[in-house]
Image (tube, rainbow, N blue to C red; front, side, top):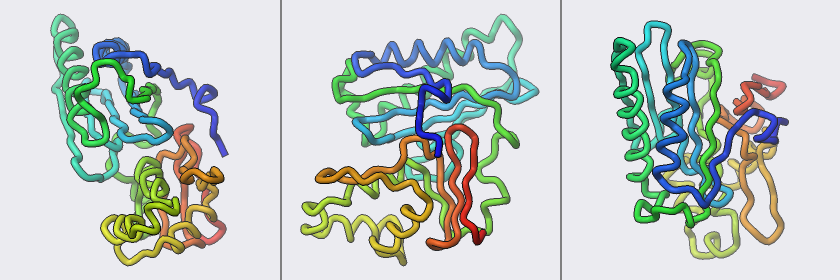
Length: 237
């Protein structure tokens, strides 16, 4: 499975960066964004991706964006649209896009907004790609699966895979609130079958960092989307 961010051409901004650095990095990429291409901005705190914003420039020069987990439905989801503009107005539109996305990131609960320097062990990565089938909320091919979760959502789930939150009932509470009808053991069966589970000894497990999303019905029926654009599927789709 692909698990090397460098091999995917992902550019990282280190933890010593500031919010101004992030805005400037996004602005430069929006300015250079070609028609039919998208920017994926991932924000990681520690080893956990807490946000992923997608910015897409259509063939008719409309710019669409959504987050916190790209085009997938998630809590606190926001989406934006900027109409096509003439060449002299492009710089102002690009500045507005970059500032809107950065302001949104700073509003998320998992990102401490009072930190000017990302001393919270935060890292940002950018990836420019060409979507296989346009900018869509979810491709029809995934409709046959019962569940649709991002890698960030799975990482947050696995963060509860430690004896302390388990012993205090936090793990069961998280599963009941976010995966109704499922059990912790049932979810682990799916993640292990899909080969996205990473065990780490005495620390909580994590999801493979290059998982974009997983669609599943049970441990025998699943499909994984990777940041590289690859898709892996179960033998029984």
